[in-house]
Length: 199
Image 1: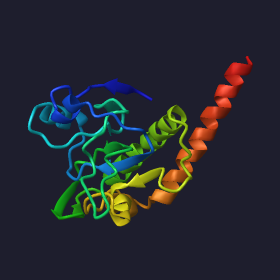
Image 2: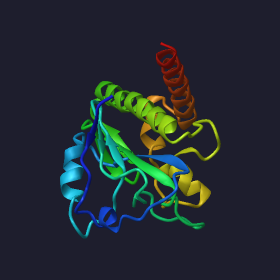
Image 3: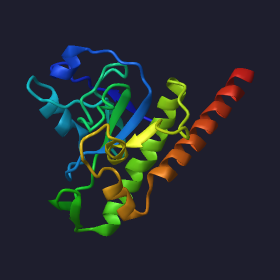
């Protein structure tokens, strides 16, 4: 897993440096057919951009953009408040093969490419979320530990978005399977760590 540090030091969220206690992880999808995280990083690393996430996941690397204990601006606000406080926000890039029509509706110009791309980002996200769960002693299967943006909205703590299910469900992926896959990966990491310590 390749984690590249690209902190958005000129972003107002970064400069506010508001600390938070980490309660969980939220997964997002960028909502446009842009594959290169650097496109977002370059356009967000300035004042006056009222959004900021902790990391972007591509098919080949993770770009860390905000210290994990900084309160991000990634999910907006719902009827009950905002999970910006307490949740690390992570964006998955999306394939160039889709074209958005309205909201979460899109057309797919190359289904084979789309499915391969989305599954690649999914697999890297599984690895990354397991790493974060290990780092912060989080249980992936515990309620409200790992949420999508749309799940957080339904709970009343995020703006009305359909990610990541709008894209994942299309290629046969679900949040429940994601949490299970993260847990499986976490158990493997813990097992490997025990073996290394024993040696």
